[in-house]
Length: 230
Image 1 (cartoon, rainbow, N blue to C red):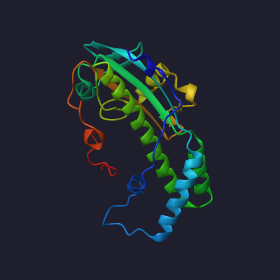
Image 2: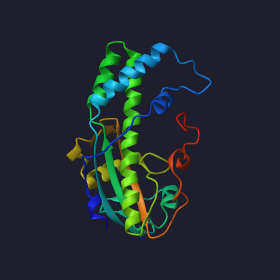
Image 3: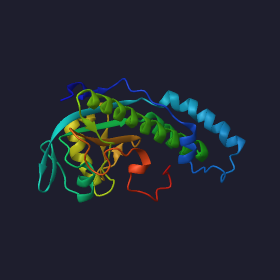
Image 4: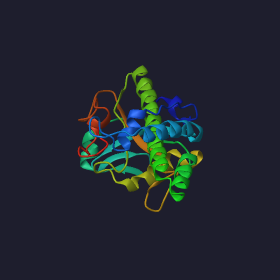
């Protein structure tokens, strides 16, 4: 099923939205006085970010076995959390993927912090967050388009660590799709390295299933009090 999606994504495009970067930085329309110096640094860091981002991803499709104890994906990944299971519904396939912008931007931001150039470091870090989110959205778009072509419904992506899907399940997810091939590893605390990376699952079905099948973006996230919610 959709074998063309079982691949490394070496041709991903991304966009960094300055308004999104400002949101990550905590700016609020009508509430934050944007200084010209910060705007100048934002322009400078946006240009630097373009040089440092190295977009790549990897993903694969797996059949889903609906078991009483949860959704079995591959030999090792079992999604047992009731809220996540309800959200996914009776999916028949799961597309697992990971994207990263590589280590260079993160290393440069850390260098700015160590030199006491905190504003530059924070801005560059926020640019990295926007860039990797854009990569995830691009993979999501391609999977949705592929699903439509074969008569499947694709849900919006979800990631380990949200709702009752344990962050530790990233170990099984990363192993299934082979994230080491794109330089992506996990720390002892199941944190992605490089940090500006995302792992996710997209559920696919022959019909719209689950409570969130047609919900996109922040409105589909359980973290309603998140400061970055749009």
